[in-house]
Image (tube, rainbow, N blue to C red):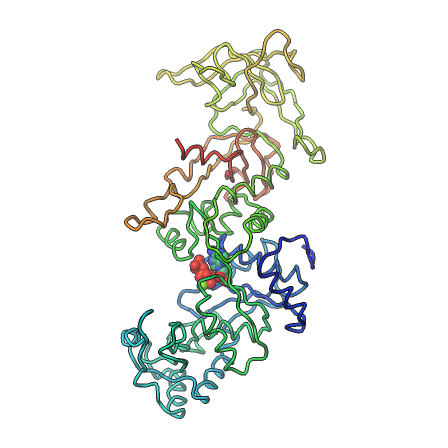
Length: 559
Ligand code: ATP
Ligand code: MG
């Protein structure tokens, strides 16, 4: 991606920035940040925020920081940090300078808390959490002042130092900003700015046993980094007056501004780190990067490309109105990318033997097929036509329905890119199960249509003698309900799609894919888009289905 990329779609935040640039605000600088809390893996909602923050900086030749908002040590971990760093890079973005951490600013934040105390704008409160809630009032009633609100500056300085030195237990006291207990906006009713937390921190170790609140840390970190446009989701709109209050009452070097946009909600999935963590912890999925998860790492393993996710984010746009985006849009984005860029291959998922009786054992005729029907530059692939072939079990019908386009007793179909074959005999086992089909090929049909009969259609196939046995994991949507979170009576777990993973252990893919690298993507003709899973070993390849060829979901649901 290049700087000043003016091809990117515009949005209301860009309009604000253009206005700022015109007025010479922020010395003409545009600085944004992406501020994840390292308490889980990133999901598709975060991709929207990443594309917006990094994309905006790119568009205006500015900078975007990656900052870990790490003020909740108990819930955070290095594993999450590492995954986030790798996901942002994979999406194609690079942050400005080093990775930053809110914990880098703990010393300054502490000094700024002391500054507020000295100004008479913060106090140590010794109410219990329960009492604090009672004193806070409600949306319709004002709160009441805490009896500790008028502690002297000296007493507050002394108590806050003791908090820092570990003299108090968790919950015994907190530091609060002294704003207005009668404010209509509850966030301004003396919000907590520091809590005692006797927790080891993944970055600052055991240096601190008090930690700043999100509200106290966020805007100040923005200011310390010179962030000009602090872009967050709409639920922080009510926090903006507090954001501005801190910035106005502290000796900050610059004045950042907060702007809110609507978060991405996607149907047929959940986008909350807490709920995704439950799915992982309860083994409903195989880890954060399970290909059914809406996490970036799950989408990556599923076969999504970074470009498809970025295009999806461009397509949905950035607004201030909440809505639900259809999963079909995300799927369409990857389908579009892979249709253009994925080479074609043939893979039989659920095979049945097709023996070509007029092709001698041991003989191999190689057919050349284009790697891509519309892109010659991708070259050709070679597939061997041998005596023992495999076709899809569902491509054969003993008693074909009308307009059957596949194989049936006595009927002829073309094997994709090779000959037309006619089914001569059906072999069954003792239970009556079809175990093998015998067919003859028509040597006149190499690159030509037969003149005296019409084959039913075209089916895919592979050589049983010379192909790669593999496992195919056909993934589908994780939930059967569009809004798995929307039922008050029933928990989202109840809507997990029992068919979200169907494994085909006996699949065979054409020989050319034998050494395909992990993550390489293909269109399996007539099946959909697939990629090589990292579970692949020397002796066993594993493919994941990214998405089918067409959006069949809507139709299935309508049945
Ligand atoms: P979750 O609710 O999943 O835990 P979060 O908001 O707590 O998400 P953070 O790590 O704090 O997660 O998010 C980092 C940034 O990503 C924030 O600026 C947040 O507003 C943004 N973000 C999170 N979820 C979404 C979403 N669904 N759509 C757009 N932006 C999001
Ligand atoms: Mg958050």
